[in-house]
Image 1 (cartoon, rainbow, N blue to C red):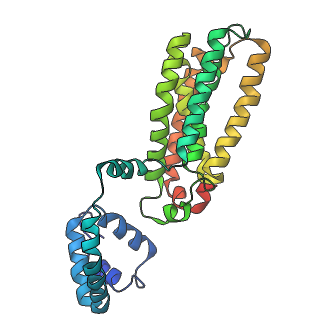
Image 2 (tube, rainbow, N blue to C red; image 1 turned 180 degrees about the vertical axis):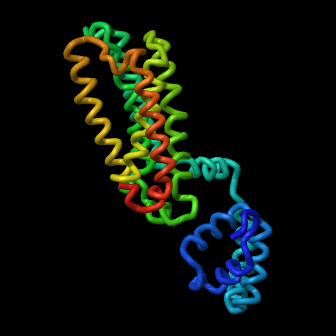
Image 3 (cartoon, rainbow, N blue to C red; image 1 turned 120 degrees about the vertical axis):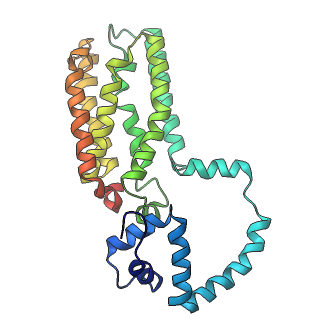
Amino acid sequence: MSVEHASMRIIDGYARGGMDLAADEVWALEAHLEACGVCRDRLSAAVTAEAPAVAALVGTVWSELEPQLAAAAMPRQRRWSAWLSRWMTPTMVPWLAMVVSVTLLALLLDLVDTGSGEVSLVLLLAPILPVLGVAASWSRGLDPAYELTASVPRAGLYLVLRRTASVLAVVVPALLVAGWVTGVTAVQWLLPCLAFTSTTLALGGVVGVTRAAVALAAVWAAAVVAPTLATSRTTFALQTGSLPVWGLVLALGTAVVIARRGAYSVLGAHR
């Protein structure tokens, strides 16, 4: 397939059912058709020429559906809902609410001074909280349409990055407000937060995003949260001196995600 448009060989083969096309050619064509009206018109003409029975069936179905579709025009609020569904699944809403609630609870405990000394619970939880939302956004068990989602042309890295961005767009502002109220500077947790998110996605291409998120959350709780609360001291992992290390982790995680971008289009990534 050329850079600009699909070749007639691929379009004609797709019109005949795609049996004589390679799987990657079918995938590339379907992804290309989403944004190319010219090739959609060429495919329509090819279907009429190569499969007249299919064209006749489509015409019959469309003639029956068109009046009903016109009568049931999508209201404005549903258009907003349809746009929102491109970025997240309905199951993400309670998980995001839970993450924000944990942030508010940590803020409350910081403000009432629970005796943890110089340790801020907001600072302790901020790096790992977005990971919970990412796990929910790409969970096979929480997405009732996961098989359908994983089979569409845009189901790979494009979709997982969209859902991750929607999680960060909700969680990071809440953490910024909580950090501002408690006096925790964003530089101490924002880079670790992004590093954890990229590492979750990188490991998710191997063991599944949900499993990677749970594993990293458990490691963070055992290696950082528990010792910090026990000693009432902010560990090196959350001090400004550790930022170059977190930057390196973020760069490595991003590189792995890009290198293994094809792994997110299979059902295993939903585990």
